[in-house]
Image 1 (cartoon, rainbow, N blue to C red):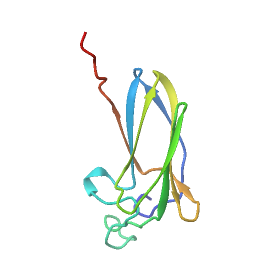
Image 2 (image 1 turned 90 degrees about the vertical axis):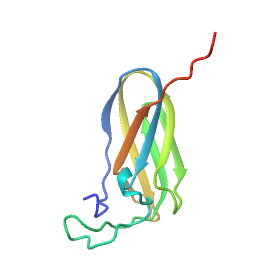
Image 3 (image 1 turned 60 degrees about the horizontal axis):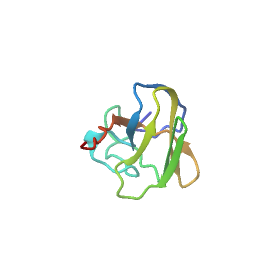
Image 4 (image 1 turned 90 degrees about the horizontal axis):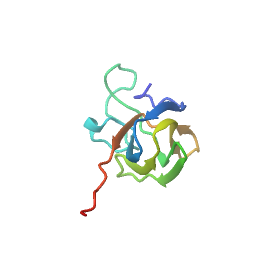
Length: 122
């Protein structure tokens, strides 16, 4: 379904373990593939382990907790990164890749990292 660019989207329930600054990286392809969001992968899409459909994504968006933001996607973008402060507790996470025809899919890969807070010297 990922290689075929299946048109689907939903949210996931997440549990924010602690208040803090979080970074969300939205990707079409896994980090290891090193391929832009809008690009396909070579090979036949019908084969199980080869190929991947190009999707003309023009905008990426995220909704997590009370945070909602979107940015344009360029031909060179391999990922889109959003950073926000979140409070501990349950939250909905939903991502969107909007294409040229205004179809929306969720990001196929989302990497999340809690940032280390800088401490000020006393």
